[in-house]
Image 1 (cartoon, rainbow, N blue to C red):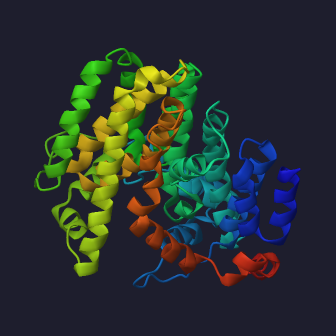
Image 2: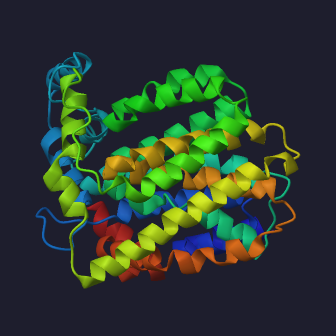
Length: 398
């Protein structure tokens, strides 16, 4: 009955509908409401054509849509051919492919973001199913907070669709390979670099992790070393890949991430920036502490299928912590791990022995929540919150 209520409320207001759906995410209908919310968000996602201070990154993707929507099939095939040569400037083909396909139907960029939202939400909710169908999952406040952590890579991130869509595809592969024991999903993982070039390392991580699952104690020790290393990693000024012969598309991405101006740009800012940096650092150490706590209490977990997922979480954390020497790489892959941390905490502490740690999460994330609110209000108008009908009509004929 409650799931039907979610659908009815959603038809009136997507925001109120998703709030109601969160009360019963075990229900497939409730998750369908979340999916519909994501589609509505994507369609109503609005950006201009010129970048100004405080504008959304989605502007860059809209410009790519405008660039690729009218290309011919021959031109599209030529771009694909260049990509698979691995020695040109084409780093990935996801946005180009979506733009080409949507452009066959319409030149309305809102349908472009709708398509991005569809792919993003599909893999997000396929992954979420593993979380909400766990025996320990309830409608308690703790589980709602853990759900928010699991879904921290939220639909707003179609604003940077390449990496964050790739991360949900990657997490889906993790659950399939380590929870369901279906190693053939490594083939799907091998396709993720087509979405974002930085995920070229992900299939390797999956393959290595698949064979390192039994080395629990060495992994815990290595994690502690990586955590300590991450504290000082960003102070190093290095160019770790200068002398490595990489495919041109990948080397361009590596050069960008290791460029000293880019790294220094991440570490400079106003007084308010340092407040933000404090909270980001707090979040990172908070998550690292949870990971260590989970790893040390792994034997309390009665779900044998979850153990390999926990071990992968540990391995990904090790790589992300060591990766902090390249700030953008380390921070992004560290954030990918949030969903696995939420899942692992749920299955390990079913009695919620450490529930106070979970209650602290919203306060640790305070600055992140502020930025999320600020970012969302730059791409949605008030009509989406109240009733989306007029927004749909408005954007349908842009």
